[in-house]
Length: 300
Image 1 (tube, one colour):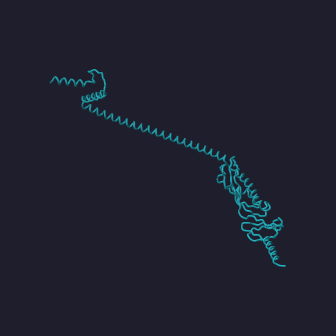
Image 2 (spheres, rainbow, N blue to C red):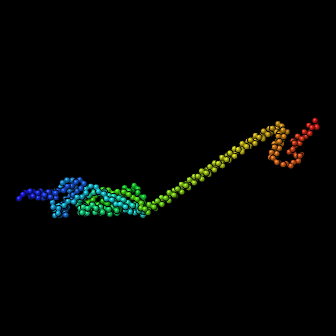
């Protein structure tokens, strides 16, 4: 009988046993080794490790678990602040599997099951943190303190699952549509009230400026009127002085000049009709002029 087939069979068996007796752990994973369903060891360092073959008989089986930083999201949850208003919040948490034995025992080593439980706890922690604060506080510098509170609130539940919570971040905090409209209306009303206050202040300032300007106009006009009256009085006085001086020099000529000025003033309008006696003093120089003409004619 040929030994070739036997050798091939032996090599195949050895290859099968070798393939099922070793496993590799890389730097991003850790391995849970189970024997008959019980955890016998956890390998967390990268390398090649030995286990009993024949996993179909449950001698040794290996479950690979992530050993790197992981994260899960919590999107579009609606939280209420202490004043009764609502926010829409997105958050996420980063974590890693710190205790593979506990992780296997609590959630059978399934990340999706662990994240489902942690989302529920994260949701409750976010609602609690927001509920302790007012409307403006959620958008202020207290946000960092809120994230620390939520992280610390989440850690005990995560530790029970063999998970270590590294950080919790609030990614988005937006007003709900209803609150956005209310806030917009309130801000519009505040801006309109502020505009009215500014407009009222401007009108008051304009009234003060106009009143001051009107008062200055009256004062300037009064001062100008006063100065003009003073100048007019001085001019009248100077004119009277000149007239008085002229009168004292030649009284007859002064009387004649005043009469001529009266004639001009009385007769300067065209169509003027005056009814006076010929013997009136108003015409005394006219009479003297006629007498002079008669005397001159007789002499000739």
